[in-house]
Image (cartoon, rainbow, N blue to C red; front, side, top):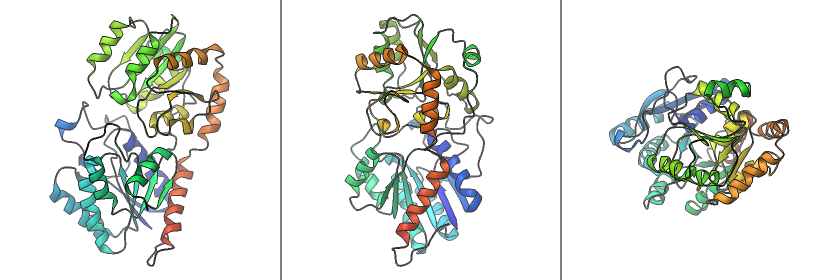
Length: 384
């Protein structure tokens, strides 16, 4: 049985590339799996970060064919013909942004002409976090080629059904990111990072406005605790000036430690191991890979009630969920968390929760979903 995955993948960096790598490793032992990724994912003018590539030593590579050019229609035709000629049983497209819809639609149109290949669209997002007026039109253009859809949260499923009401869709879950290693000693991690505080919050990942770092800073300004510090670890993908202005305005120099660069894979374990709790003060979300990194490191989470975040948190056991855009409520949750802080209690509960989100289960349910639907089709091809 042959599967082709079209997605960001190594050597590209970012959460979806990591997701694809882990999915490949789960599917490949028993199937013929091919990964096709981008040679140009974003034009430089549209990319807010410093680099689109993983540092060479920072990620475990997977075999991938570096083929796609997101802005070259001639390349799309070439890629489509190549995939069609290979005649995979299933092509899985990772989808998160309408910018890629024209390329994916062009490729899909050619692939479907072989009268064999089915197309599954793995929806990380349907509506982007920072939406544009043309998103729905472009997304529909691609989604009409989808035979099967997989979403990672209820909110994304709802977004999908607004656009494609009769979509064959399966809501699964975002598996735990297990590729960042195991936890290390908390005190050793703090020493490595130069953290001297006794209470440590972690805000991790690319910094974009929708992730609510400004809301966290306002919450911190309401907490009078000299033992508390927030570690902000990640590269700015939106203007950083306003955040440093807030640090000055709220006198947070002693409460915030900034590590504002891309965090290589082998360094991630130190930041999560050093933290007591991971902060997700998002203003908008679907699901969060950061939450599933926190689960990997057995860390509780304080998150806002947006997208599917609350679906993965057991209130008071693996974290707390608060109203979005509400700094007083975030401050209240932080204080509540530390009132009776018991590291072992949270770690045990998070470990139990994380066990529900394995890659083995995800891959099995994905393939079962495709099989269940293909069997009802005239030319259905059962996958194994």
